[in-house]
Amino acid sequence: MILMEQRELGRTGRDVSVVGQGTWQLGGDWGEVREEDAFGVLDAAVESGVTFFDTADVYGDGRSEQLIGRYLKERPDARVFVATKMGRRVEQLPENYVLDNFLAWNDRSRSNLGVDTLDLVQLHCPPTAVYSSDAVYDALDTLVERQRIAAYGVSVETCAEALTAIARPGVASVQIILNPFRLKPLDEVLPAARAAGVGIVARVPLASGLLSGKYTKDTVFGPDDHRTYNRHGEAFDQGETFSGVDYATGIAAAAEFAGLAPQGATPARTALRWIIQQPGVTSVIPGARSVEQARANASAAALEPLADTTLDAVRDLYDRRIRAAVHSRW
Image 1 (cartoon, rainbow, N blue to C red):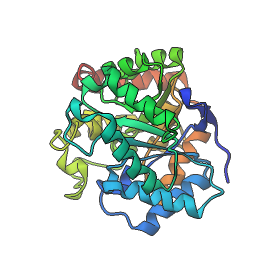
Image 2 (image 1 turned 90 degrees about the vertical axis):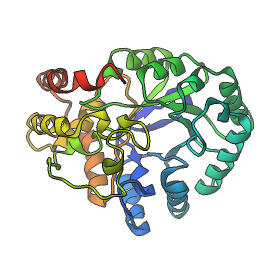
Image 3 (image 1 turned 180 degrees about the vertical axis):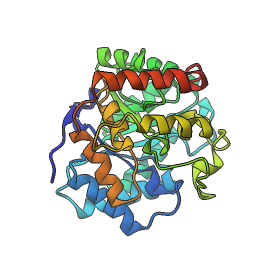
């Protein structure tokens, strides 16, 4: 088993690997993944030094949580911190974020994962008003007091939501979209999180695969893949698909980004390395649908830090091609 750098996940007081394993792909919305292939991905991640899995109760209607629960039961030697999310099982209205619903969702996730106490539960990109609700945080505190969860955090769409959550003393971590095509969190969110001792989990790190450099303008994704059905935010926030970047713009920018990869590094590993070395980031959570992807993602932790010239080039690329499209919205 490979050793990987560990960082403290904010107010949880627990250490997690700088590269985690996102498991949205294992639930469904990226095309079908067989159970044995899902276990292979999780096993490859653990053997590569990953100690952090991120999931949600709606990934495959609980399938992702269930797969993780079964895997960890079979691998009691795997010391993995599991973060899940709740809140997307109901109509997205602030009045649905109440203790009774939290208890029901919590029961379901604990059953799926096969544990009495969840390591971390994150509100799953709720309506903006939820982040300012005293009653919501009181309800989350109740889950901690009853030892149903060890800690709670939030997953956000916007920097404003992140800053609101960071100001709350009970929030352990914030999950936010951060990658070379989404730089706005660097301005205020990461510095505020560092000052408050709040962990930052970077999601959508490869801009839904754009930053891998594998796609072209002619690539066709399956009908059950969100990169087909959510390009304009038809099913959920558009920022979750290609980081909100227009596909044609993203393809052109990704081709330029690929030219910034150091010798011997793929564009995907370069993007993950870029995220890892941003001050304030705790862990980055790329997804994977194959053993090879999981291993390659984890190996980004072993890359040498990117040179200042490369960091400057990423900023220039963002300013020229991406900033106008996404900076003001997210």
